[in-house]
Structure formats: C-alpha cells, structure tokens
Amino acid sequence: MKALATGLILSALLAVPVKAQDEVYDTGVRPTGDECLKPGASEAVDLPQLLKDPAVHKGRCVIVEGYFHVWALFLSEGDTKIKYAASAKALQGRRLGLYGRDNLMDGLRGLPRGRYVRLTGKVWDCESMRTPDTILLFGYCHYTSGPTLSVVAYETAQPPR
Image (cartoon, rainbow, N blue to C red; front, side, top):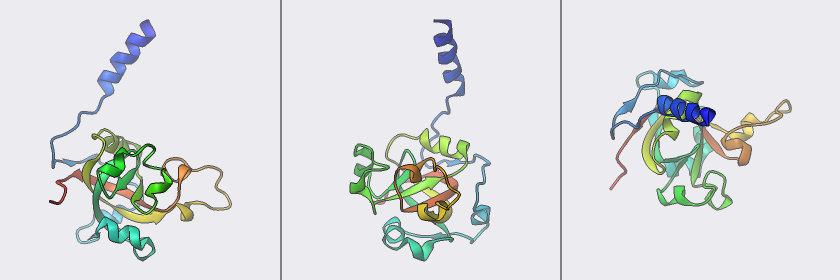
C-alpha cells in the first residue's frame, strides 16, 4: 500500500500539464536536425504531399501539420482513433512516424489524442535506420516502416477549416 501511495504521489508530481491551445512548447531539446531551427531553414510542406513522395523531402528540414497520436502524425483526427493507429497496415501512407528526444516526445504524448500540431524537423525513413548493425529499433519503426520526422520543435495549432 505504501508503494502504491508513493507511486501515485510521484506520478502527480511528475505530471506535465497540457498547455493552452496555440502556445509554443519550448522544451529546450534539440535532437538531430538542429539546423532546422535556424530562420528560413525549414519549408512548410503539406502532410499529404510529404506522404505521397517522402523521398523528395528526405534529409530536408520541414514544417508539417497534422493530428498527433502516440508516435505518429496523421492526416485526419479520425485516423488517430483507429485501433493500433501507429502501426495499422490500413493507415500506411496516412501517417508520418515521429522521433525526438525523450522530453520533447513526452511533451507531445501529454497532449490529448488527435490534437492538431505543427512540427518542425528533418525527414528520414525507417529503412535508413535499419543497417547490418541494427539489432532492434524502438518506437515507430519497431512496428512499421515508412517516412519519419526527427522532431526538433512543436506547437499546438488550429486545424484548417
């Protein structure tokens, strides 16, 4: 019982509050892709365009918007509600895998399911992370493949009308 109480207290103390809509989350975290934060370094790309031809954007800094859930960015809020959305084969081509430093990703995961966000980062893909020396991948590419984004910054946003 004491361990349970201690766990609950620690959980409450470590909980990250969800910030107000359209507020920029400054985590101070910069994974690979720091250059994407320099003024003018990142170009805005529509998520459907990026997913249609990810090879065109590979290695580039982009700003992309969509609906977030677990470790992926989705085309629609409805996609985030599908069981196992981040790995469901039915959603291949409709999501972008996400990676970033732990506290940046923890901040994203603290948002409500299906929250519309604007992400800045560098486009990669799961296939590039698999090398002869790779034993195990964690996160998005552990379960599926396809394009990914190394997230360096995010903010909540309003979905298009």
